Image (cartoon, rainbow, N blue to C red; front, top):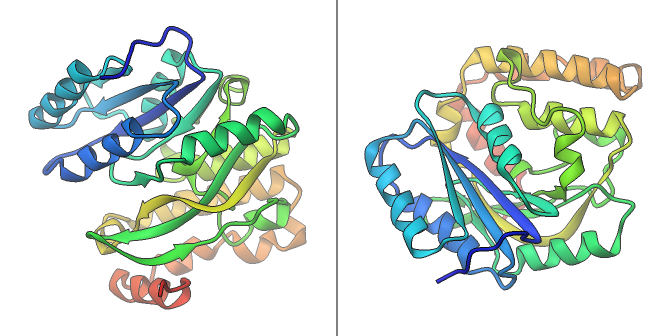
Length: 276
């Protein structure tokens, strides 16, 4: 059983919205509880999930008092839910986690040690292995030293892999909980931070298992593609990349959104590095 920590080194934050099974949630929580570094609190915001999900969360909290629960009575979305977690966090560093993914047992330890030794970076991410069902189908390798150009094709950070200094999340209001940031709040966040001189680094180790399957793609509606195009346009202008290639990329989501989800998913599979 974990001990209550008044001033933890790390606050792990996670928001969830689960309508059906909780099997993946349990695996995600277990992957944090079983970290090699144990000096953390785990803040989970339930974004109006079902009663069974809340029951599971309460059972975990009763077993490990490092777990702190927040609950939205109605759906607020990822950005607003994460901001609630940030407001409640007490840690020196804040680490993201998603409710259907897995963290390597040494993830928190490695990222904590990096930030302790490298004050020039505001946050740190890592590479990820890609999950579908119970298996790994590929890998996503991100740039080690992300620069402005790395924001053009896609975000150079895998959102739930990051750990950042507390001030990174507090200095400019955290995540933007607006209609046009829905499902791309991380992209907006990272470009905004970059424009303000908060730079990140990606550990070139696969410390995260990221769920990317056809179910996720089927949830993506075209209105989210429109929002992403807007975020790209604003972000490229903010970081000075629009006339350095951004004008070629800002309409990308509108084009991609026209491709049938099944075929786009197959293209993604073909492009990603395969595991052996």
